[in-house]
Amino acid sequence: MSSRKLRCVSTSRLLVIQPDAADPPGPLGEWFVDAGAELDVRLMPDAGLPDTLDDYGGVVCLGGGMNAEEDTRHPWLAAVRSLLGKAVAADKPTLCVCLGAQLLAVAAGGRVTPGHDGPEVGPALVMKKDAAAGDPLWADLPLLPDVLQFHSDEIAQLPPGAVLLASSPRYPHQAFRIGRRVYGIQFHIETTPEVVLRWAATSKSKAEAIQRNAFDEETLIRLHADIAEAWRPFARRFVDLVAGRIEPAKSTPSSLPIING
View 1: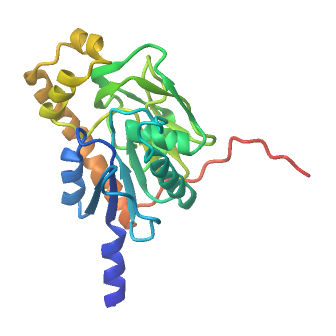
View 2: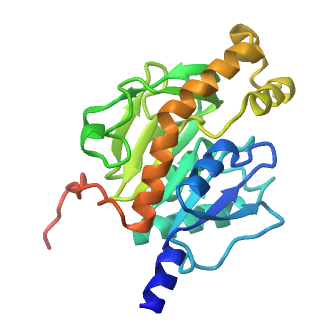
View 3: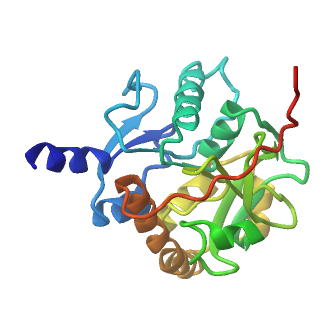
């Protein structure tokens, strides 16, 4: 009995990869802890990464200001993609946010490019796709959940076999699932008004889009209240998935052709 209890504790341990000091786990991390998870936060590159995921029940990869394949300036990105590839291969419960979702897409065979319609910045809504209705994390979200957008690159092509869970008119690949337990979301749910205002003050590449959206603290406070209402239960469901308290998504047939001989 005691060994089983120890195993239950380990399955709720999350490896949290933080590529950028400017994008901490924030409320998302608090929601995970409130749901019973233990977090091992690795601020890159100094904290490094584990060689395997054996000691973790799940993986979270946050956002950052770099590009998903900007290895010349950030050589450690290759190690992050490799570890995410291991999570995909093991179907380890995984949640990747913004840059994290782009790293996941590349690691699993998708493609990330500069956004064809420029930066997507500010309060936004994404629309659930039909496949979300049968997904254990997505089914109970509103049809149009509130999110915070802050990206210049886009996931131009999903990995082979990925299931699209949410979309938007400008950038269709807003959320996806690989296998039964691995998720990527292009938008942010982990921010606070203070974090977003700091991004707005320092992001030269998105300056024009920021100016159009005219960020103000009151708007951001309302947005983050709406984000918490929708996404706090989502975070709890992710921890339940990690701990084995809910069933993962059903397997989907491969989209690749079957070749005989």
